[in-house]
Length: 285
Ligand code: DHB
Ligand code: FE
Image (cartoon, rainbow, N blue to C red; front, side, top):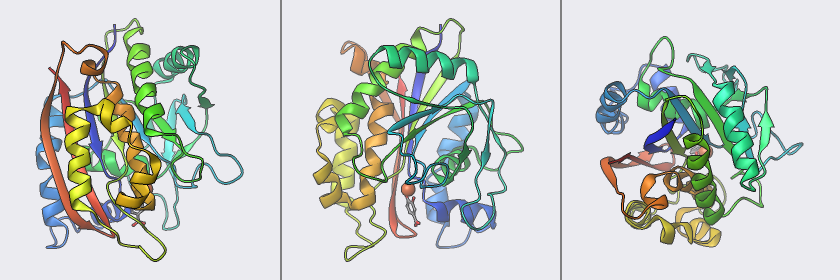
């Protein structure tokens, strides 16, 4: 059967993608940020998954106010990097896994989560920047990726609790797939940031790190964090963090308290553009 062996969490700041694409990663401003992902790139090589289930948000790129799916699963054979205004990023196209994605859609919908099925979609920085941070600049991404888009842009957005519960359903779905596949689940976006208005530039290191502590040690309590706390403490775009709870909910200790997870890497850095960058790797031990 397929199984989830690890989860990866990372911010997706578009300026990070631009820094990579323009060859600026060793500049003094960016060097400390990319240093925090050196371990991760090696870890990806040493622990290469067969499939990445990548939870991210679309930023009015594939979707718009015309259509706002709360949860959308990409079932296509491939997904092209989108043009977000400066041309598409020069990164490989994303190869999907239609069979596993369809299986997960079937299972998760039968577990009472309503997903939108997306057979054609371009992917924006929310998905490509995490891949670049974890994989560097390869000719092709190391494995197929199932994009899973969450609406955290236009209210009403899903609660952290619902995301956490959905992660548990995704774990069950993966474990009911017949083929022996090593699956990683990624939760992306965050950490504290507010891009507009009077509080633009808001960074809350203390809150971010306390939230990370709780995400690792007591995810059920973390899932109970209400939206208003994310917005007040971590800024309007800090609410992207609910996506991390989908990945955390899919880890084995949530399903079975006799089992545990191991924190392999943790990194926090300010600033990247106007935001705080957080990163975590958890393995099922
Ligand atoms: C920016 C955009 C994002 O989507 C994000 O999550 C962080 C930063 C930006 O435009 O700087
Ligand atoms: Fe974002």
